Amino acid sequence: MTESRSTTRRAQREPAEVLYREELDKLMSMDPGPTPPGWRLSPRGVEKFLLGDEKLGIERKFVADRSMVVRVIISLCTSRGCLLVGEPGTAKSWLSELLAAAVSGVSTLTLQGGAISEVGQLLYSWNEALLRSEGPSRKALVPTPLLRGMMEGRLVRFEEIARCPQALQDALLSVLSDRVVIIPELSGDDGVILAREGFNLVATSNSLDEGVHRMSAALKRRMDFEEVRPIPHLDDEIDVVMREVAKANQRAGIEPAVDPLVVEILVTMFHELRNGQTLDGRSTDRLAGAALSTAEAVSVAHAASLNAWYYGGGAMTIEHMMHHVIGSALKDQPDDRRRLRHYFDTTVASREGDGWRQVQALRSLIY
Image 1 (tube, one colour):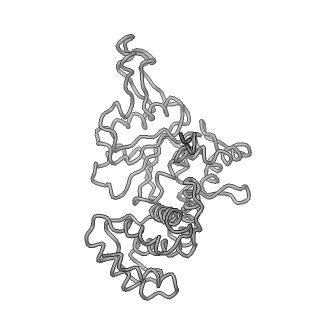
Image 2 (cartoon, one colour):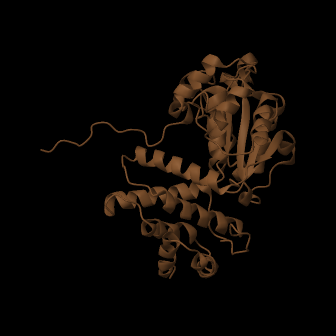
């Protein structure tokens, strides 16, 4: 009988408060405050956690304009929730996770709008066995992440809120306005859940989801809106992709040679096809069916790394990268194949350098 190669299995991905526990502990130990009620870090400490501090050895985890990040942090100090809006792949969910980890020390109190169809999934349900044997009680109550956040005084994440039906969006009004949830099945004080200090809501919504469910007008009035945009500068985006691919490869237990030139070409292609403009200011086609985001570039580079490790001798090449670009860029829009060919013929073909010549030589992959 052969023994198992490994008797333990690691989590595929740990939450931000686990990944960055040492950084959070360091910031807490030296955070001068002032700190809002119920928060673990001051607003300045949260900002350092997100944007990094080289002197303190704090990694930059999110690339954005500082003023936008400060506005989001301050909005969470108020009694209003914050809604992060933007194109798919702009790291809205990652930003909300980092905020929850820094503010509350827990980022896993999360609701998914597309998975909520009834009020029990939004606020609470019951332990049926206890309900039958003892009747309604706090003991039999099963709180959702939203209700737990209120009871524990923590930041709650609401992902893809526009995918939640409007009637259920309106159920959030008393939570955000009065900071209270009434449970009619319980009598007296047991039926009144008051939010503790530190509770608030940070929600996300893809701009492409507009029309899935219209956002409740009353809910809009109770939330600050902040647009999260793609990373504007190519060098910043390349830096993010290199860093995140290294992390993804480490988690996968592989050590391929990641060629910075391959990553630079990948990010440049995504940057131009996403913006509809080349780096030198010429117009080009935008792809309609693909979200060529920084997150997507990380996924492609990681897939190319896996391909190189398991099939290519351990060194990432342009060909590894291009095979996965095709699967990422060409989704369900037939015209995107034509647009990608046009980009190759007008932009890639005119570029100098061995890397770009190798990319052009693989144009036949866009069959």
